Image (cartoon, rainbow, N blue to C red; front, top):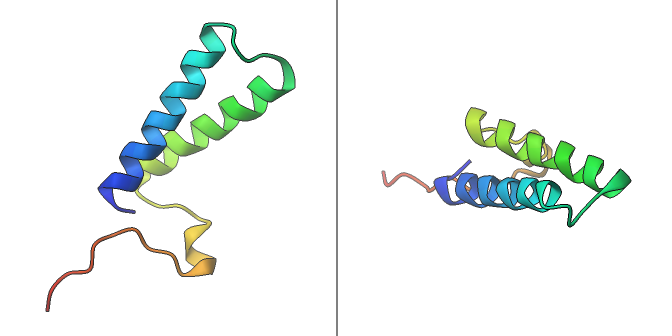
Length: 65
């Protein structure tokens, strides 16, 4: 997972958390989005997204040989 991908995931998670605590989102939608925010934060810290593997997606820069 590339650094841009990590930053975007953390920013989206932060936005969801802010929307929840300001009362903009609530109920079932809030619960689903908070779980998604937690997944975004977790995958950012471990630098691995399980959905990328089966699809062959990589956001890491290619190293020059």
